[in-house]
Image 1 (cartoon, rainbow, N blue to C red):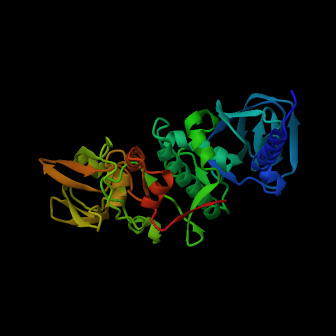
Image 2: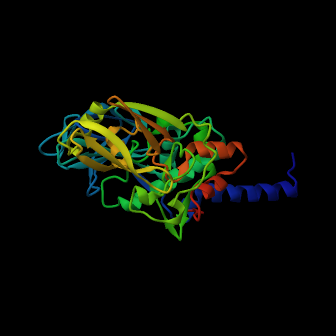
Image 3: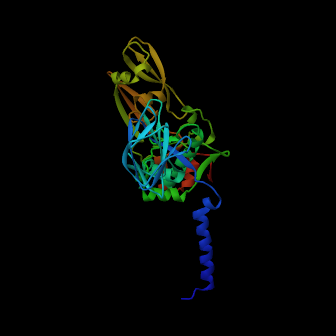
Length: 385
């Protein structure tokens, strides 16, 4: 069948478009941004496997130490000389396993993209760091941080926030052995096995997009439910910028199951959990709100023993000590009754930045992911890195 002139022109430009889109990094000599994620910390040993050719290099010097065609599950342990793998002792405190030809690598039976570095820490334990490109990292995060069943724009907003936070952490942690952890102290990351089709699409749709304020990347914090108003980041951390000022009235997270909550707690249990932080000599008899901030959240609490001696503690520290899954936010009141306290609160999380259930509510009302981000991070701009 003879091709018309219009078809030839269309196919030519379509080809040029595809080459430019798929290969722009290589055409311009750019390397994808790499993220280092601590997936296991403080463990005595680890099981490593590679389904294909691989190379092991010294993580400090990049000198090649070993090459193999594949690696069946093998134990890595610490020795006085360095690190031991399958009978081989490498005289280094850190090595990196580099899979070749896209060979699959697993750590403790979990599949990861990219490379894996194994460090011998000062205490003689093992630290495992997954090194992979930024976009693949975000794909391993989204499923854990937001429901893949939610509307696409809510997931896109989460993707941009998570990517921004990762880029910020990469700069902040550049002198350390890793940029982020794989748990709630950073962003929950589960590797390749945590990827879902819909969340991956959200990552691809927002490829390379991050938030900046006055030309600089900032930590785009997020949380589950703000409970009606977002928090000022300066209440928790040493950061004071417009996008994280908080105090955004939010009516979009009302359907969250965490909007209202109650947590009963025995005063004896509270005192026991306080441990060394409980500086009072007597038995805890009373706990009350000492001060609230402008968003209505508790800033400080006062604890009293049976002698009347008192102790002031920040609500942030108190929540961390008692358990953030117990005291779900610092927006609460306290009811006391015969040695028991009931915390009656609103929201789940620190309240700074993106409210995830609020993003769901906004997306259901037709807001785009860019509008969602503009609402929760006012004054910021979306740029492509």
